[in-house]
Length: 229
Length: 229
Image 1 (spheres, each protein chain N blue to C red):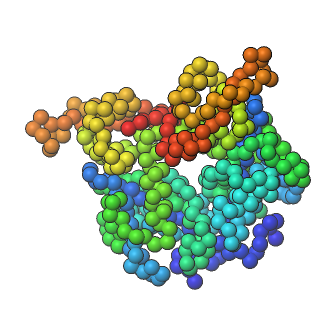
Image 2 (cartoon, rainbow over the protein chains, first blue to last red):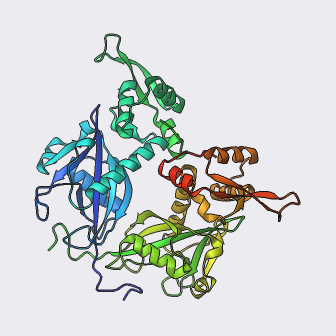
Image 3 (cartoon, helix red, strand yellow):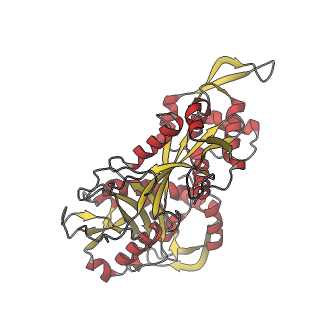
């Protein structure tokens, strides 16, 4: 007998993952096509039930790994969604996590097994249950985080041009940024290392490649700073 | 039979509330003395189990009302705490909420019935389970929110002096602020209304009272702005 608990209550506990990736132009989200009823055939976030022996972070990590084959990913708990009728099958609370992955590194075979597909944020279909609300909240959180911490860098390849970085911020914030202004602000963050190497693919003059300074980056991350774009 | 769920799993769902108040000098938190085992006699956040027919917001609202007699309070979901061994009685996930209340308005009788007491943040004792971690996370969230939205105002009486407002920010941020600098930054937010009325209690000259402009305030709230103090 547990004080204050009604033994007739039965509430299930799930975890759903919003998985963001970036392909040089667009911010994308990885969705799976549901293969069982209800809402069979509709698109959904990847999810699963919490197991007795794991915490929520473990569950989110397990679910992400199952779909992408990826470990050591930036993940953050987003919010616990708990509307009474959110899942028509049974009363289920779902704690949503969002992850930011490098789109080139996921396991193509795994995501094919799950009928998973990357969708540009502007082309996301109607999702099952409250998954659109989860995604919206994740986008807002990602935008807020991006203006406080330089987390978006997880989405880029190891070496990138300023133009790629600007494209990334434009995709996350969903607005055009002024090039000169952007470069000044990024430089004022002092977390980039400019390499000797150039990317020659976009122009004959080429564009210098950059990488970011992990130590300074970690330092900024703990001492919240504000990047207003 | 629910797909992916192991029917032997049994996980309980609780809600715990971090209730902040401000008494003109200190930021405080309302704690209750636990009257049952385990950890009988130790201090704890106010909590309870989620009921079948309510969502997490409802549960947090119910718990806050039971302890303070107060409705319509600023509350925000903080985080779901889920370490496997966090509660020695049974596997329990607790979703923590924090609330900001005007300390003068709570129901004294109710909190006495619960052996509840206001503690300055600097004098918080060892709490049960992971409640100290919940409180720490709530303080960090409150600090971050305070520098993005003017939420701290819920903690003040309707009319307040600039000195009271500065004291509040100093208490939340746990640092001394330069008076002139503070006044400039607050004025630049443009959400205060300066009243004709003065508070004569602190000096013979008196200090002008202010109130805040609900409309401008709500507008700033939706358009996140940054107040760096």
